[in-house]
Length: 405
Ligand SMILES: Cc1ncc(COP(=O)(O)O)c(C=O)c1O
Image (cartoon, rainbow, N blue to C red; front, side, top):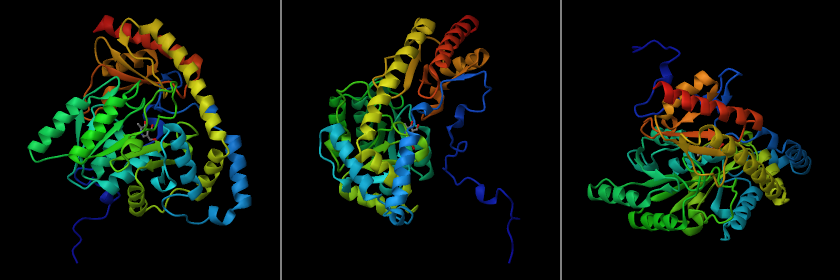
């Protein structure tokens, strides 16, 4: 027996070709900065809103009332009560009927992205993505050997006419595409939401070109307007998967979300996963939280909270750098995507370091890694006085950079 290579710590950690690795995922891309730096962070919710006490009550009740099922394996599609609760929530939200058999419970929406990719994509497939998108989704596609093609967006989301040209050109070249991954409601890089006409056009394109619509709706429940069109799943369940999450509404530490689609597609996702499902204990506690009506009340409260925060931060930003950048007031979520009038976001990030403020520039989210004028200011996590001071520092950085470059 010849040993080709001595064993070493990195032996099994070598990258597989095409595998896209980044830092170990954590809330921490912007962490590790000094405590004197004000951080428009990684899109985390406000920890003061986490309903710890109420959830604690439900956890205790589950352990008292149903310890057997809560502490053993569950179907990998998810606990029936939570699947039903999510289906009822989606039905209330969209005014369209969802059955619990359409819902697969996942490890957050990031788990839903990976599971949908594993279930419906093959190595060598291509996914069309927004030019500025969620880096973990790029990682999930890359690890499967799935290629991505960036498509342009404006403040309301994917530019569907241009996307259609891309699909036609790829079809003419015999290349095609298997899926489109995008956010429809104040995700990355949107302050707004995808209008109904664009949603309808996406459904038409999905049907014409036989592509799957992967709608990331991670921030979708935090909404300040009630005119948002339904999920693409309500419009075309056989062609769409909604990747949903409790991270922004309840708490990211639950690691719970859903993939909603047609019942046969949900069934495929349940059959594809190999992790034996999300925690039955947590799922049962969260199901009680939803079915009691507490979730809806909580969401209404946090929407009011984030709306007030948005107004405070937007006001401070207008004062600090309204002359040097533009943005649309977000209709939901807790991030302001800003476009600089001059210079790039990477340049501003460097100036921000000098002024004690940090944020994520567009290059962090870019499907091609390219720098440019856009940046994300996430105001969910921070305390309002800090955010206001952060806005002031950002204004100083914008003007400093403009003076010195
Ligand atoms: C656009 C987008 N998708 C998915 C996720 C993953 O969220 P989670 O897995 O916590 O539900 C995030 C997290 O911030 C996100 O911003």
